[in-house]
Length: 546
Image 1 (cartoon, one colour):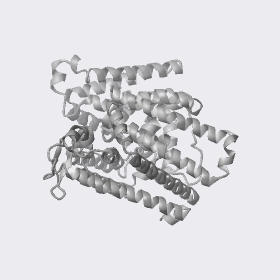
Image 2 (cartoon, helix red, strand yellow; image 1 turned 45 degrees about the horizontal axis):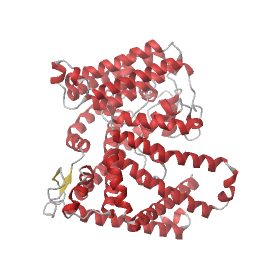
Image 3 (tube, helix red, strand yellow; image 1 turned 90 degrees about the vertical axis):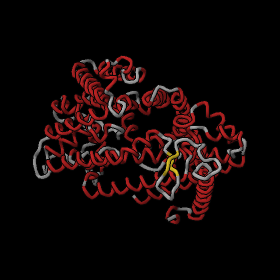
Image 4 (cartoon, helix red, strand yellow; image 1 turned 60 degrees about the vertical axis):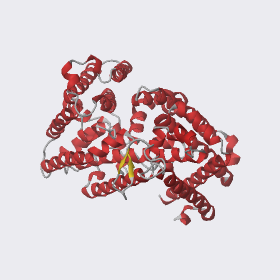
């Protein structure tokens, strides 16, 4: 395989370095984690390790989100298999009509929300209804004022819901007592994104964007999805109350996403139900190729492999518990070996767990949507370790959210022309959207700080003739790009550790411990450099075969 990547000798050396470092991470990580397993010298010191099913080992269930999803997986599988299968059976060989299908979706949504949130499901229904009514009153008003009203209304409501824990302090006794099995305010952040998508797409519907919907040679599913996002719907009725509710509360995507834009969702429903077999209907509005039975089965197979991978990881590596509960710093004074190498391993394996966790959750819910006949975007397009810059990382991590941000924030704020300024409100919105937490605000600051030099350097390199000499020397250019990429990878790892694991207060001890071993820092940056050079070669190979 390496021989196909180009510069075979050097790439073989890069691959060997990466392989040796990875094997070191696996061996040392397993040995360190084994100390906290049953019979280990530090047994019981890592919280929330429970009895597992692989070779009698404990399993790390310290992450509440993964623990809840894992325990609910059998029930969710049955519910969504029934939801999708019944929908397909009723639609098979008949012209059901999109309104009946949306009514079916909405009926399931109401029952699903009533189980999840109890009486608080009424809050969700009322908030979506309020946003629909607000948008209907603004549709004929000044475009900029209307969009500002939609954004201010939704963001203020989100903050109020976060501060009051879902109106808990303001709720009558009935709502406080019957809150269901899952807090509604946790799901509301995704519902809000879908509500804003509905409002913005409707306010833009007068533009009748064509957005590349012309004939293409060999169009792909991504082409179809891009066009469906940007192409205004054919009728005002398709921006009505029923489509709005069906989109905002669509059961397979309600809990965790992926996020599907309003236009994309409705075009798929209309294309599948109202124009079945109609050759005159645009190809991009019909049911996506990704939703064919064969592709669904292949995708389900990938999802099962992902689940197996995270089960193996959590049975043999306990670094999420170690990181979340700061086990290393807590027990180092009592004899636990927790030096620079262990700190680096904690960062790597925690990020690996996070990536696998979100991959499993998002692919499971995407599978449920595909079974029913809706093709949402893929959230995790490639492994987190296959990215070497900030822009590429966020395009491939929670990709549907990235597409949402590009459509509804980045482009309206000026896009590439104002990129240096636009990233700040976007990243701080993302931080507040996740939660009101100083740790996340610190993460947003770090991401913007790491992103700014990347933007400036890329722009200057692409547009200024002073770099012509470097462009004419590809070998030197590759070395420089690899060195910059290695620093980028290190910054990305630190930023995500701060935002989602150790917090701002854990950053300084993390850096101090790493800097205490210059050899480890040099080895890590060297491995990042080699990995980046392999990524460059792989990208060149892919481009050359297209």
